[in-house]
Image (cartoon, rainbow, N blue to C red; front, side, top):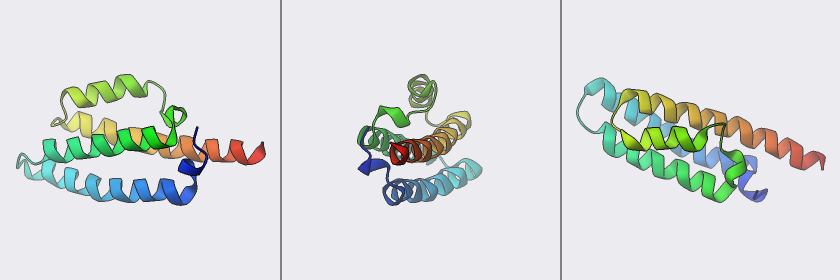
Length: 104
């Protein structure tokens, strides 16, 4: 685990980027304009970079399987919701790991 990569300011930067993408993905699904797939692919890449930089320890339970599901059909609304949950769970996990690292 890269302790510096899970520092609050670093994690917050990743999630600021996700917040913008998430709003655009949500709007694309509402508009049904076909833009959701490209935005989701960008968001998937963002998530993978986050995990790569922070370390696999931040990956939530069943994260690999869930990401595989998302990557299989990124244009589906269910995959968007699942990716949103992965981001939320990853943020919580990073906070928990920061606390554990601070105690040791």
